[in-house]
Length: 201
Image (tube, rainbow, N blue to C red):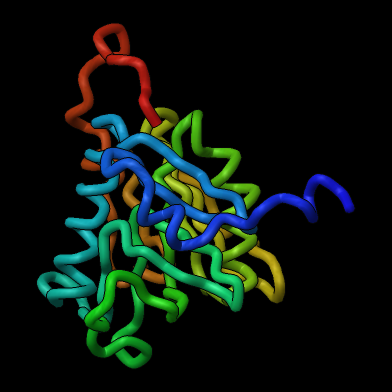
């Protein structure tokens, strides 16, 4: 028996037992704990959710038609991977109401990971393949330190890079290309590099 097969798989109980100041995920049976994000990450996350929520959830300045949630807990697959994207969205026809539960098993139509140096490898190498397996149509990778947005579209079993934008670009990014996103808003109020505290996530 190899070390990999002998390893005890993490479970939902491990997530429930995690310290409250940590984000807990179970990916391929391994528990991953991350501290709550630093402020550049939180700002980009909040600003993006605000722009998309107004237009696509509430239909103010956009078409509506979605439910968009901050940090939803997703249980995906038969031995579930427990994944917490920074943002996720479901089209109304797939999830007209949210369940009365602590987590959801219905894969989203779109997920966004706001990445940082300490989480980028997990986001790209472990979480993105889970989203592909579960047929999540679009994944966004947002890096507030590099000030970039990558758009991935599911193409068969894997993702195709639709495009990468950076800085102050104004973007019509699928599946939310009905409106123009102003990327400058996502990082415009972060203090200059010399004064920035070390990144925590």
